[in-house]
Amino acid sequence: MEKPVRKPILIICGVLVLAVAAFLLFGRDGTPGDTSPEAGFARDMATHHAQAVDMAFIVRDKGPAREIRSLAFDIINTQSNQRGMFQGWLQQWKLSQATDQRPMAWMSGHGHGATPAATPAATPGVMPGMASADELTKLKQARGTQAEVLFLQLMIRHHEGGVQMAEGLLKLSTRSEVVSMAQKIVDGQSGEIKLMTELLKQRGAQPYPSILKSQ
Image (cartoon, rainbow, N blue to C red; front, top):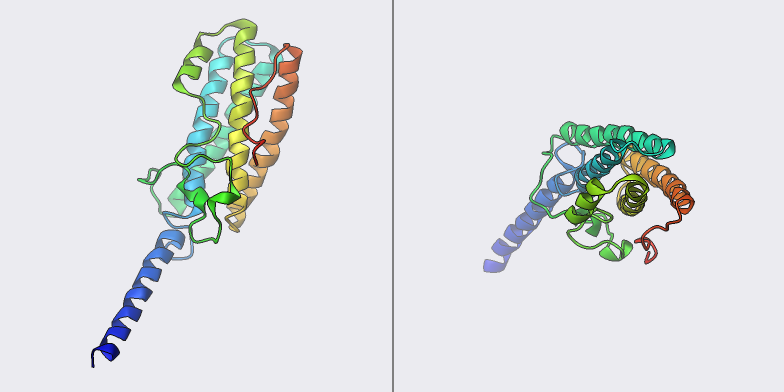
């Protein structure tokens, strides 16, 4: 007599679990939920962009060559504007800017059928391409050509990380505005990587080993 009672209860429990998972991923009205790749991408990329803007301000204030100053200006404007869009999305989706989830948790593709293997170069809990505190200190202390070279090396690696994150999102999402932004980041930052590599050559220097080669 117990089996007919248990079955409906198990079915109800299963439905509730699926409903909670769907809410976390897609929210109440089909918008991205708190643990969705879209929300994770917006949060992590906002943080990632913030460091790029900081580095660009650091080198700009050192009175670098015209082409470095122009590059820094473009990074400050482009990535500040994009960062504002990421934060606007989260507000529109009624999600907090902060989260208890580890950085890059969204790259596991929760609920979208993807796996970590889709982004092999990503390190769990670490946003790729980020400069360390020690590297930022060295950039602040550097002068002249040394500062320009270090800025270019750090920013190339930082852009590679941004490209990696954006390409990861493209494999996990079909939401039009997020996919469009991710593709813009891939295209724009890939172009700037080529430019910065050439600027390094002009200064007799090379980029750091690429973090994209293992993809």
